[in-house]
Length: 279
Ligand code: C5P
Image 1 (spheres, rainbow, N blue to C red):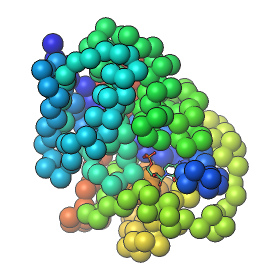
Image 2 (image 1 turned 90 degrees about the vertical axis):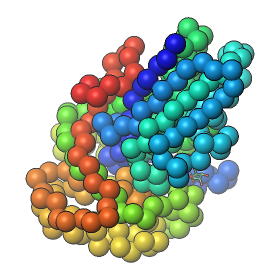
Image 3 (image 1 turned 30 degrees about the vertical axis):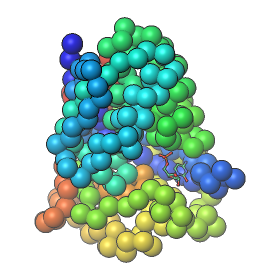
Image 4 (image 1 turned 60 degrees about the vertical axis):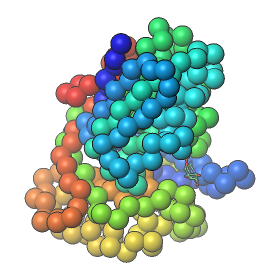
């Protein structure tokens, strides 16, 4: 039996960092949304574990979050099996688009389906926080308000549909180093619940507290943002810890040789199905 599933990217429509925690992580509050820029994962049972990927730069050993997810699922359910996984990579790495986390969430969902649903969605959600901060979100319906490390999740109704451009320079950013460069006292102490409300009442306020450290590390990002705003887009915001941006509104893209550029739309999944394109 083979299962082939999309594994969508996400954007953070706003991202507020509230404080640094004693465990080294940061307390955040963010509105996450899945988009139809997707990897594809294929799963079939096998005598041993194998992972292949269309992108040679992606590690396929036990460090890949896909294996952390498979091992978590086997440990929690007590199910023992080998699995063959093929990953078609489209979501750029080190972009803040959550590709690795999405692959892990897709793996949890897929293995649960293939094994006859030994776990409830609530259990998958609870377990997912053990292997990363952003994995939990992808088990939502695609629109969620996340707090804590990112793993405390409030499901939201789907947001009004939007199309956007995703732009990423060749150079990526590592999440831990962006957090290390963050100066908390430089941030504007906005109330995230008020920001969430702004999205639900049709007057969205977009911001990302991680732009400050990312722009310090890579000054070309501030120039890129300015250029995209001058191209006419109403909103240009870095996603997650960068280095990608999303652009909303009626701009005309300037030439961006060497950049990853794609058009995308918000997607959501229905309660009992995984993500599909055009959903
Ligand atoms: O949890 P995850 O492995 O995705 O996080 C990667 C890194 O990002 C962490 O090791 C930490 O440095 C940083 N991080 C953080 N606060 C968060 C999420 C991630 O400091 N809420």
